[in-house]
Amino acid sequence: MSDELAGRIAVVTGGARGLGLSMARAIAGQGAAIALFDVLDDVTASAASLGGDLGVDSEGFLVDVTSDTDVVSGFRRVRERLGTPSILINAAGITVWSDTIDTDLATWQRVIDVNLTGTFLTCREFGRACRDAKQHGDIVNVSSMSGRVVNVPQHQASYHASKAGVDMLTKALAVEWADVDIRVNAIAPGYVLSDMTRQFTESEPVLAERWRSMIPLGRMAEPADLDALVVFLCSPGSAYLTGQSIVIDGAYTAI
Image (tube, rainbow, N blue to C red; front, side, top):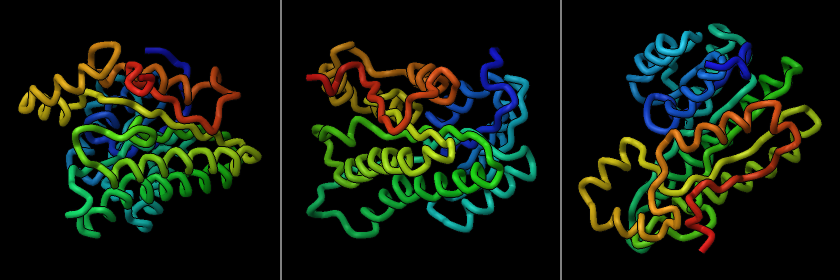
């Protein structure tokens, strides 16, 4: 364990499992205290396990990022239990496979609400906390290569639109908040073998092989492949980097 982020407090959305929990572990491994936000009940157990494994303060909070009142309450509880956060990782996200012609409004709205509006709400509340405490802040939003290219063969128009929105929100906030010392960046992963993705690829090996064949590096990413980039974007080493969405996709979008 390093101490590059020692003394800092990080909020990680979608932190009960998957990429959110993996990123939280990477940040905790650098000494940061962790607040996990999720709608899943096991967020408390995930936080306890993370804290026990890495010896950092870690708390889990039931928070629906689509709820304004939930997000406001979540940040208040983080300040009460851990202190004012100076790192925010927005990893909460969902996707739906649906032919657009058959997609109802509720399905579209749910994806936009979680992926884009949820990112807005948590960024806003984090920005308020940093402003009020007069402290520096680092935000890493989880976008996707799907904000730039169209996935095939699956149809995911709502996901594409939401992630393109995350990229532009990242740029807008980076410019708006530069003078209050809050940096805002995003990572845009390609196909990553999270727990849920791994279950799918094991049940659909033909489709999984099609995806792999389109990646020049010849494999999907493991969650740990994202760790170093996330840590870098939260660290002093990236002090002049803001307003960027960095693609990490094994060169999928390069061809």
